[in-house]
Image (cartoon, rainbow, N blue to C red; front, top):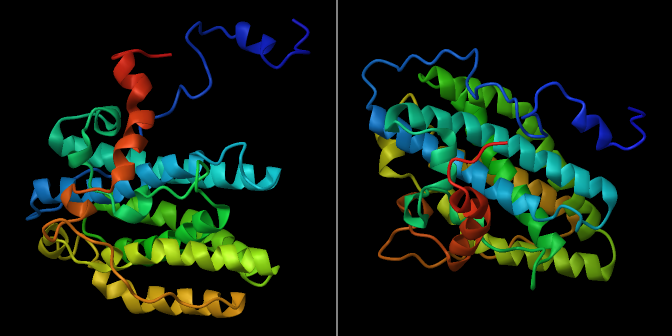
Length: 294
């Protein structure tokens, strides 16, 4: 074959089932998977679902920007961030699945909306569809990555070896995510009048969902030494966000709180209207062709 066409080379592969996206090693390959003594495994699985769902759902949201970002380099950057989060989700869902008796694919594609445990910030619709805006996506990425970096820096000391390994691997990735979002925040906030307006509007859009990030769930409270109490990272996160907003000439929005249903939110499986539409797209192919493989 001449290989003048990029797709021609695919036809000559010895494995007839080979295709892009296949051949991944097991998500937790090489990681110590012993369960820590004295830890409730159901709580551990629930906590892994929380962190894994955060990553999975936000990865799906970021992937919506493919081919729609304001410049080619940003298309690639957002896709890479989405892939980083997808990798974290695979490991965390695999760990949860060891307790629940389900695969990472089953947990990603075959759960219903009320079974997901991600925070609302990961799921809200910020674009690129109707009403979406790049400034809002950057505001969400800044808040999410700053919060997750603070969590993961502490999670390295978790008594669960899998959580500790995921945190250790994810730290460099999330540090880049935060730096990338911070640079764009300053670029837009300290740019033109229009970019400043839209970046400020983006902050106002996501800020009602910030408070949920620091609410301690009962599962987290029971997993002392394994989980990280999100309330313990608030001052650190606030300090980073205030520094970035100051450099960008932006105002910190008022600390309003998004409405809850009977006091419940994403960690309890109660989601925003946007979640159902997101899952319909995320899960469509797998549910349409159950058991299909490349």
